[in-house]
Length: 52
Image 1 (spheres, rainbow, N blue to C red):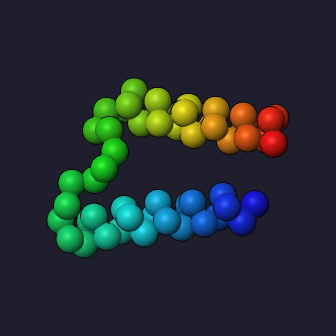
Image 2 (spheres, rainbow, N blue to C red):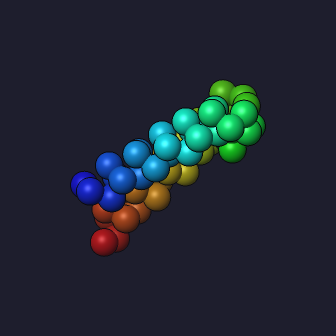
Image 3 (cartoon, one colour):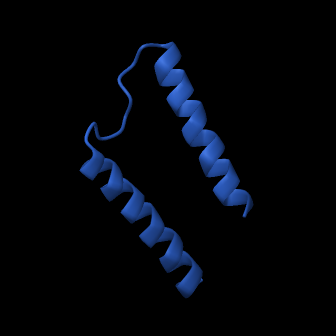
């Protein structure tokens, strides 16, 4: 649980930092790319839960 919260906080921190420093966001610009990242994350978390 703590790892998930830490991941979300880190992701938000990177997003805010990129916005403040006017650096392009390190994420896919299209919806399909963002869904791919979401699916990979969900698969990783599901695999960790099932195998761990």
